[in-house]
Amino acid sequence: MAYIPSKFNIPMTITGRIKQYLGLTDRTPKLAYAFAAMGGGGPVGPAQNGGVAFSGNLAEDPLRTASRNDLMAVISHLRNGDRPSLVGQIPGLTPKMEAAFRTSQYLMRKTEFQGNEVYQLLHPIGGETSIGSSWSDLGFAGNPDQSEKVKAHEAFTAWEKTETRFEAGNLGSAKESFRKEITDRYGITLLNASSAGEVYYVMEMLKLLPENFLSSGALKSLNLKGKRVDASRFGRYDKGEIDIINPYSNWDKYLLTVVLIHELGHAVFASLTAEQKRSAESLYKRFWSAGAVFGTDFWGMPPEARITEQSEVKEFFAENFMHYIILGKSGMTGYKTNLPLIGELYEFYRNLVVP
Image (tube, rainbow, N blue to C red; front, side):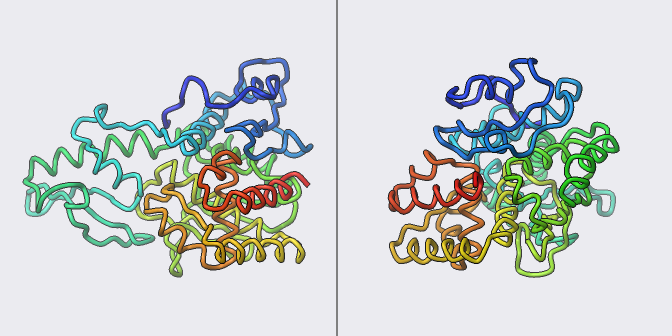
């Protein structure tokens, strides 16, 4: 489980709903999303517009409740820029190592060759394929000695166990919940989930989306272990199917959250009417003309790289859909590249989510 703060940075402007959302009361067994108040005017979830509601009593399913809180914690930390560091808690973990591991682009493997232990630092490039990487990426000057490699491997293993693993739980029960609440209702299937924690985490993420989108047919399946078939590095959306590219190592939960919401943004774009797409294209052109396009470091790369990625209208839409969900209004306007345009962009997404 990822770190879950004792309380979230959420103004209690919708006190009753927020308390129910965080499980602070048991007055109603059926809880609905109350995401609106995050960060002072964040995205309004289905609880506000008659959309998706949870089924059953969450108090009877601790793992589902934990997954919901886990997602809230991840988004809260991304929004506030205060993700807890494990440096100092995991022996041998340095800030340079932690930054590299958070990109999900490094894998440490221990093998044996001629009776000797061999430690490899690999860079996954999709599927089962990896290439060797430089130890300098972890902050070493040159090739470290064996004892240093052992410590680095132990640090990576401990970090991975803490930051990337989902609770095993009852996978069959979780899949049945997904079928009843998502597949039967919206025709969306989930492929290659290996734990109940994964299933519940994805369910909670889908419930951030408006009812009209989930019912649109723009999203048909979500594959958590997709193959890399093109230049897509993290994920891809094509004709109703989302593939999260399996980089031969476990995903960091924060990066998984960012990538999945971005790919869901592509599905939302596919569901837009012709008029809505024209509005999106107009915003795209005006942002680029004004030099107002902005990016975050959520992907484990410089923000400038994420700006470049928005060179097509569909990428611009998907990236800013992710900004809308994670940053909310206060977070988006905090970039100040062009406040009137960003305010207009925020309202554009808000009107899509709350028709």
